[in-house]
Every structure is written in C-alpha cells, then in structure tokens.
Amino acid sequence: MIITMKHHCLLLLSLILVSYATRSEGAPGGWEPIKDVKEQHVVEIAVYAVSEYDKRSGAKLKLVSVLKGETQVVAGTNYRLVLKTKGGSATTNYEAVVWEKPWLNFKNLTSFKPLPA
Ligand SMILES: *[C@@H]1O[C@H](CO)[C@@H](O)[C@H](O)[C@H]1NC(C)=O
Image 1: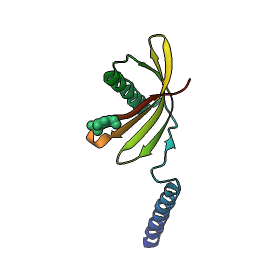
Image 2: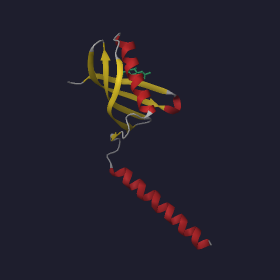
Image 3: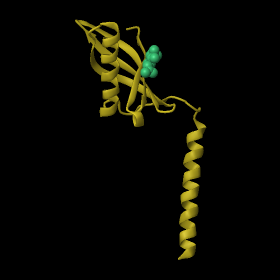
Image 4: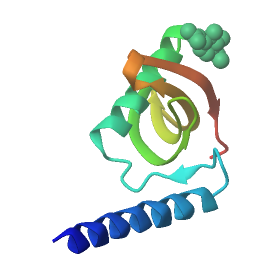
C-alpha cells in the first residue's frame, strides 16, 4: 500500500518534471500558435480589438473573421491575431495585439496595424 503510494508520487513528480522541461524548451515568452481561432474567447479578444480600434480612430471597421493568432504568456497573455475586417466595401486584414490580464478583468489593445493584402 505504502509502496504503491510512493510509486504514484514518483510517477506524478516525474510527469510534472517532464511537462515542465518540455515547456521550458520553448523560448521563454515565446509565441504559441492558437489552435482554434474560432474559440469563443479568441473571438471576444478580436471583437474587442476591432471595437477599441474603431473607438480610438473613428473608423467603422467590422470583424469578419480571425484568420490566425498566437499567444504569449507575460503577466497575463498577449494575443497577436490576424483579423479580417470590413470597412464599407473594403476588406482589410489587420494584425492586432491585445494584452489580457483576466484576473483583473483587464484588456488593452497595444497594437493594430494593417497587413499587406
Ligand atoms: C493601452 O495601450 C496603449 C497603447 O500601447 C497605451 O497608450 C495605454 O496607456 C494603455 N492603457 C492602459 C490602461 O494600460
């Protein structure tokens, strides 16, 4: 019984160590691709980015879709998303960077720039 417990602890410990080692192999603060850009939270970040850009610039862009994105863990999470937007009849892709600290309910649009078509 005790031996089994010990084994479980060791197994758990080595699993933690392995996953930690695997994680730290990637560059610290590196960007990880978002697997599902249709995920509700990613879309919320994108909607926020476009509406915040509109508010700041007076543009009237609308989000069409999130084409791709990456996240970076930095005292919260940076989302770098490629967004397809529509302003009038023009469709433009933008790269938006949103910094989120969910535990403070804080979001900020730190970058929003057009991408070459
Ligand atoms: C949000 O980001 C903008 C642009 O980087 C910056 O000027 C502004 O101070 C930031 N706002 C907050 C509340 O951090």
